[in-house]
Length: 414
Ligand SMILES: Cc1ncc(COP(=O)(O)O)c(C=O)c1O
Image 1 (cartoon, rainbow, N blue to C red):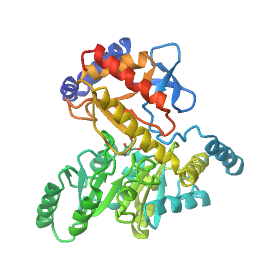
Image 2: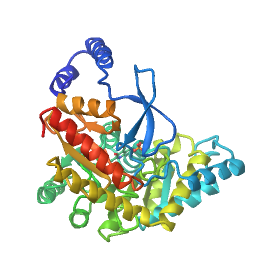
Image 3: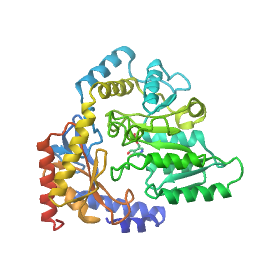
Image 4: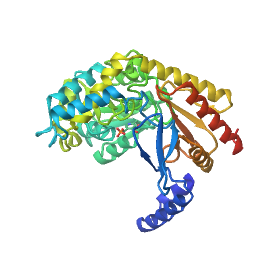
């Protein structure tokens, strides 16, 4: 189903939508076009997958995992998790506000806060919840938020749920952003607080935004900033601390969220900031207060991954080298890409149905990559999204590039 038909479908009443969507689902399943696949075994550079309606698991080369530093299946991380299970067990048995908060949570929060030059942090079960957490804990209908038009679905959902009035902006046009802030400020009632959020690394194309200038504009207009560094932690900055380190502006965003499900290779997420801001989240934010504390094995996995980032900075260097190498090779065969700084490489290879067809063919030949379509990107900007890992070898990168180029040629896109 192409993106325009999907937009049409969204306008139909619920019962029609349900019947129509289910029929489409069955048809797509029959043709093997559904994106959902079932994996088997640890997340690594090679994995076994089967399609939802298939019966055999086949090994594929993976260029579609967010485990950018290759830590999801790392022996040190696994050993630390096993040790933690022996010492602390599994679940926390309650929300952090009741019985589910331990010394391990506190120690990890301090460590994660320090990465952004902040005083404190709260841990959440995932990045989606972390974005709900800061919106819910900091703002209400009397405030205003100006959000990056590329923001993750969780930010947009949180804004809708909280009812905070909003505007959007394009981080590629910070002059227009500043003019928008001036207009908002001129019209706002006294005491209205303006917040703004931006993605440090754009999840759809892997590039970093001009964070120093964004922060300066926000500071000039007394806007509280929240940086979504989901794809930046572990992938940008000399030691992987994220966009703040990349631009040498550690400590200058008011709050920073990131997830531990991508480069950190585990799960869970956090929001860091000043003592006062984090106090608000810890004591007033429903997504933090009313969900159980992060499980002990997850805490151990995140802590061990941070140990590795500190001890083995060459992982981040290797990721950067691999990304540059793959970008060079993709361009050398004539493919259109965006050159970003993180682990994501978008490849533009024909719109709508074509991206799916090529993706399907690549998968059948043993290469797993993701695609981005509407509603993740506007119609016409569909793409393959490659995710590079620090642990990929040059041979694996060469293989992936030649498979993509070959498929593109066969489908008349190159
Ligand atoms: C920019 C951004 N923010 C937040 C999230 C949510 O993170 P999580 O998968 O940990 O819920 C994602 C995940 O894709 C993301 O890309």
